[in-house]
Length: 109
Image (cartoon, rainbow, N blue to C red; front, side):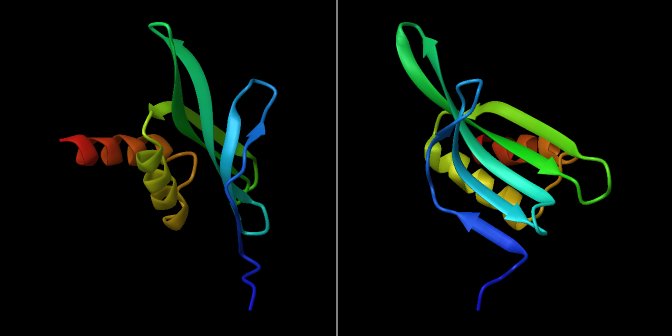
């Protein structure tokens, strides 16, 4: 039986107009809440380093809200774990910053 409320997309790499790559996407509530795990590559001391961030777009409450937190971590497994935490707990744009800060603090204290 398919769940019509949540659509999870497999990992893939789709580059946006800014050169960021959407690796993983999840939509909830018939598209009214959308999450993306994004990767960007930057040069650091002569090397190319990948970093990961999260984008949330929400229109559950009328007006569309969007937030994008970039360069959260360069560790893919940490980014994936955080992405799962955010999606499972239905984090909205308003609370993403606090959730990320708490997660990073707890992870590295």
